[in-house]
Image 1 (cartoon, rainbow, N blue to C red):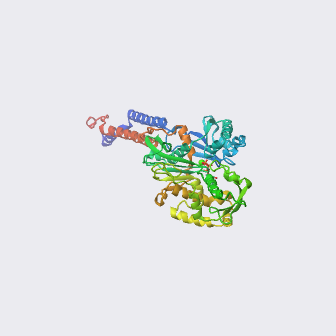
Image 2 (tube, rainbow, N blue to C red; image 1 turned 45 degrees about the vertical axis):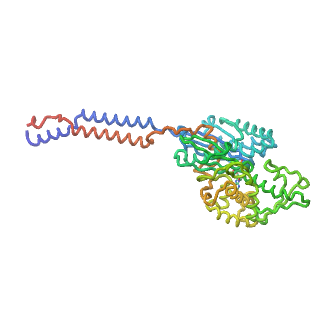
Image 3 (cartoon, rainbow, N blue to C red; image 1 turned 90 degrees about the horizontal axis):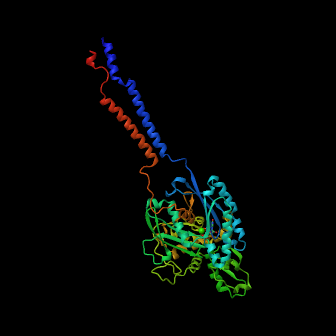
Length: 503
Ligand SMILES: O=P(O)(O)OP(=O)(O)OP(=O)(O)OC[C@H]1O[C@@H](n2cnc3c(O)ncnc32)[C@H](O)[C@@H]1O
Ligand SMILES: [Ca+2]
């Protein structure tokens, strides 16, 4: 055998890879591994994202909003999954304003509910729950005229039942629920339940009531103000209170009443010089507009006159003093109170302040200032003449524009003299409208609770996220493959003729 032949023979021995059995076995193993990975991946792949929906109507004292929430169908119990998809403001005032014409309350919802029908995919309509919660405006109407409030609720219920969604009820929610669900909303949206990193308190200022809710380490002396939750495996001990009549519209009535009362025996036209309104503001207002609420005493002695002249003075300090008078701090049956004999432990931790807290402080550009600076800036703002303001803000609704000085002063007084925030704790307040795409308010918390979407115990989560799982499977399979090849190379028994045999 010549040298060339010998070399060829040796090459053949070394290239035993070329033997058909080995090629077939290797290919089979490779195909096996690929199939194994493919099956594992397909088996665990999330199905095409399918969404579920829920609708909540916030029937507030000043207006009604319709919120549509959406969440991935297979992740119902994962916190942070539900988001606001759409919102719609119902035209006109709140449903309690239809006490004289209840059928119009239901009709008023039509435009927004038609919008909901368009926003939610048709095949989901039937399973989409719709809830209506009415707040302080309806609580006041119920106090004033129970029959009228029932008629209004019936009217909105009938209207909602005419839609293809799953109607789950229309009711007046309690102040406690309003406070607690607002707290759940802001903490759910900030993912505080899963992180267990501490929670934020919730401050909600509406037109007719206001809520304060926070976790307190102190003993809560009144059971009415205490709520316990177990969420995602953690216990929360909440302080909450809702002050009916302390929303910003009702407090304005209270404050006007306090100023009108001493003038009632005057025979001349009553001119009310109001430090909370701007210099140059002068408007004729009916007594009816002030005294039409159960929050203010029914006074009949003004019957001789129908209206009074409301004249602005623009004096922040006097306005501050006048507003302080709506809080009764002379009596407290507990170790400490906010006002009106309501127990409140000292405020603790950070707070999210939303609805009118945000509308007003944002308009006044006061959201980033400390308490003293906020007071100074507001003082200057209140002295601005009404004409100047109207020229500066031609697009802002006149009713809002006229009231920002009053509302800002009320917010500062409520937080400082009511809830006892100090210069230091003021820094813990964040004025917020939305967290992500979702508005801060009680509606999301209400829906999460009614659909059992926040479990008491944390759900078991897979050890690895989906991406990590796929990567791990791939790497392990490749390793097996590589080890197999290496094993073969190192431990193979030469199968061709040996060197000796050839020689
Ligand atoms: O919670 P309740 O007391 O039932 O009332 P609501 O739900 O209707 O109250 P909102 O938070 O919607 O609004 C609070 C108040 O802020 C007013 N408001 C709304 N938008 C505003 C804006 O842009 N600027 C000033 N005020 C505004 C509104 O008229 C109310 O008096
Ligand atoms: Ca509200």
